[in-house]
Length: 231
Image (tube, rainbow, N blue to C red; front, side):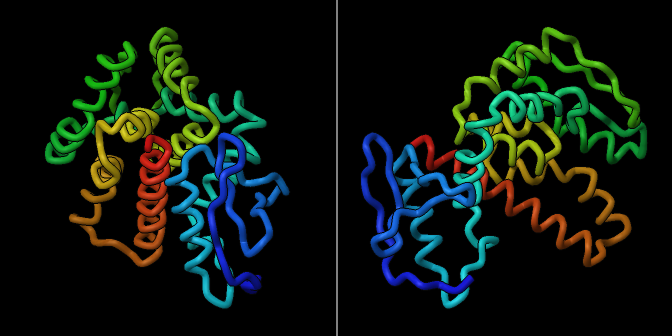
């Protein structure tokens, strides 16, 4: 799609903020008006549109994509999005530990146990740790506590949490990022403990590097979106 607008600006719209491309109000892919709850978020998305050159590249506008998803999906399918996020509690990355080698076992424990301790204290959600890859059911009370935490997010926060959780493979890390217990770089590193260890042992192929870079960008975008929602 070619860029046909010259000016991008932010305008108030009731209690929210909209973005104008010349005189046209920006809409989501589902043709809903892009109404944003924070001026800072609107400014950041407007900057993404203003940075486009002759051709509009959606992949270079991660904040726009998250906002559109919040309006087009999370606001309409809130229950489904919540259950998708909460589902990670049953197979959360930080709960599944290697049996060997000792170096990886120690690295996993050092990176992940503090997060499990935090989620226990913060949300009263103690999650069981196991070894291997066979799923181990978590206590219903712990899952319910995670659900309660997730349900506190509005559509915009829920969308960012969903993106962070899926990129990290962990609702624990996603919640820690949302609560500013970890930053984007820390979330990325703790979510990549296994992969980083394997790369140290065997190296990294080009396809895996591209996939890891995309996940890192998703985490960074979700973290920035969360931050902009809080200001």
